[in-house]
Image (tube, rainbow, N blue to C red; front, side, top):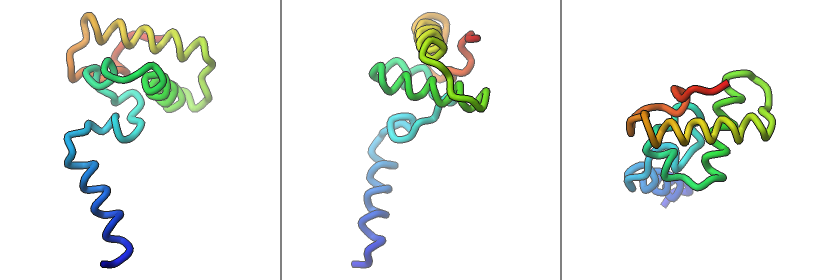
Length: 92
């Protein structure tokens, strides 16, 4: 078996195991509400931090991350649909 085969198999397992993209990689603002609400606080914080950094180009501060995470979570739990992106939630 060639050395590349185990890596290829591992990637295939991840892709076809039923995991959503945001469970495997940090998708930032493209994260869907259904995935975001199922994540733990650390993963949510990582998604929000990436979204804010992608938007502004600068590292967001902790207050901005916390406020935006709460806004996205509240939005997803109320008016957001399962497939709504967290970037659609109102935030500063």
